Length: 330
Image (cartoon, rainbow, N blue to C red; front, side, top):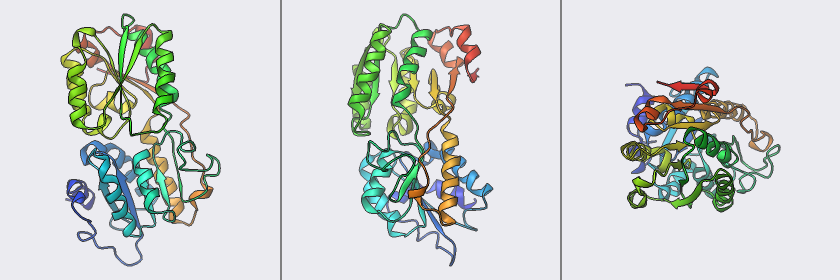
């Protein structure tokens, strides 16, 4: 087994203690920390894109760099300890995924460079001073989730025009701007004749209770926020529930439609964010400062429709959407 596979395999075990005892850093080889919110299997696609881009830039794990991985396994209370673990290793740079990872890392270091892969409104959340000139030790790439809620609702209305109610599953602790975001989504839904209700879910137990409270007979579609648990460690459970009760499940990430059977996904291809993040990591290793690397926003958005899921739900996708879709999964 190569080192990458080995590290992925022991990712869960990394929660119990540092893996630096397993992989000692050769002299002169820079160390890169990576903090991810879900499990090794859930984060595999993100990690593969990041690793692949690093390798194309000449940074090969175990040869020219040492990569230290930490996974929170969908449990936010682990972020603090994992961030401290990584900072204690004094890496040249730390890459991370979303808001919770970035906040945990900034809480323990203001000197080690941090590159985030998908954070909403990093200026409003206080991670950077400005998109063009971040300042400080942090920069990265946004995912623009809230801005696309109205488009996702519009697509849902076109696919299932009879829908009159929908549930927005969200982690209330994920982003400070959730209330404002939901208000915007609720207004967009109302204009389409859809009553949107917010269902707060922060733990697997709360998800169990939330799913039990959703009445299958109401044909209430599920809109799922990007979150290490909701769209990561528990995403298969949500999809299984939705299919079993013939409820459309709409994820923010197009990867969820591809991998696990969400009805459709609309948003940026976040694999590109991983590749771009690797580029920023490479620049930092060569001496660039995060303060001088602008935070970049997505410019291209894709629609992925899972036709297999649609058939399982008894939904006929309008032909014009099949033509417009960037990818249709059979």
